[in-house]
Image 1 (cartoon, one colour):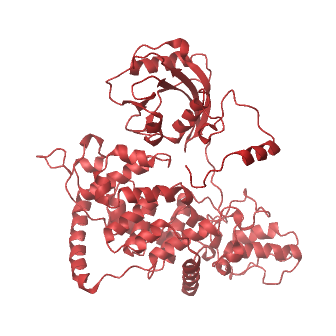
Image 2: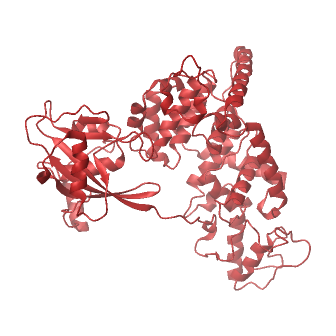
Image 3: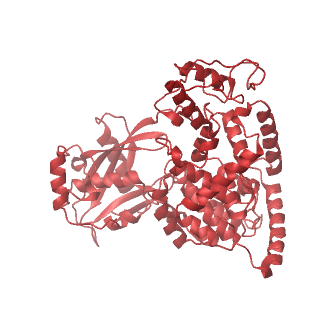
Length: 572
């Protein structure tokens, strides 16, 4: 993305703002105690990169500046022609104000963490319409933020985004909800007032962004600094990891410290200083659309001629066809990589030369730390998708919870359902849910435990009306949670009221717009599916229950879909 040019008459003003901004950042850095000093951290990283590159085979590096120049040119030319039209790109490209541009990038980068682009687009559009500036977001309530974020997952992201906006803006906040980096910035005479240490302006460098803003790590800081401020800061996300591991044939575990450091070093080396934001977005775009995890489209890749993984696949194919010349193994190859290729090419007759022309990557151990270990054999069917190596993941722990939809169908103003608020920390912090209690998988004692939880919120209730309706399984990042869904309908005319904090009686319409998680929406669909008069074929009731009918045959599904009323594709 080419940075918008500021008007000539405003350049002096920008220089003054930049100077004052640097002063604010220095004062903020000197008072910050949560993270190590930005300059010191940057120096340490550069020292680590020097040591790392000295111990790595040139096969995994970019030692030729001409090669780097070609890579930048090819990638940016491809990006200019093929980039997707996304709302956050349009927002940043057309924004002249640096703070608003950085804010637009920040919101998009936080939303895109662990979330697909197609899902983020609508959330981002609604967010920017509701809070177009940092000041607008800082003035919002956490309840409003959670409400808009509902369904996007990883809810702490929205909370930290607002914390950061308030830190930049310097608004009055409840000190009990602040993180440690704020507590020492409070004026003694105003215990609830945060000092405007940033003067309402975003930090201008990757180092200060990471240092000063909560929830902003190395990747997010680099993305904001490069896209919004034009700093030549590299970025490494999942897409970039895949691209770099394939381009330099890095087969070791990318989550390991050594490989991670090497990838960051490569990204910093490759980023184009003339167009850093565009280059970083191009690398991520390439990984998302061409260099994909499965079935990558190598024929359309602008990096194909520079890609070690593609070269390896081509070489193996030639070996299988018997078309191998005397120069089968390039002299710059990693010796471990070459040895692996010897074993894998059943038809190859050439062996790895033992001359000094072959560069060593691990002369003392004989094992390259950036190559795949011998226990991970090459899979011919995967091709370039052998890179990167898939990190082993622990399965999520399994938990069980009993939850109840408590409804007053005869309440004044229409039927009401009970919601309670979760604690302000931990999983789904601050969101609303149906009363729930953690239980053992066996249903033997679930009703008693759940009834006690309900009575703690609304008082005595008839135990005989508590009905088990089904179950919902929802997987969070580290927890597989099974909800046993119960329902309880209060038929009495007299409404149940409570004055306890964190309790709400909402209409069904209000529930669908409240700050509730996707899991709770699934629970409510089970409840709706068991109520008389509910359309069983509606989208809201299509969740598994214990009394679910047997699956329809493919032919019956076609007939049913044909006779269903037409619904617009854009309908909710």
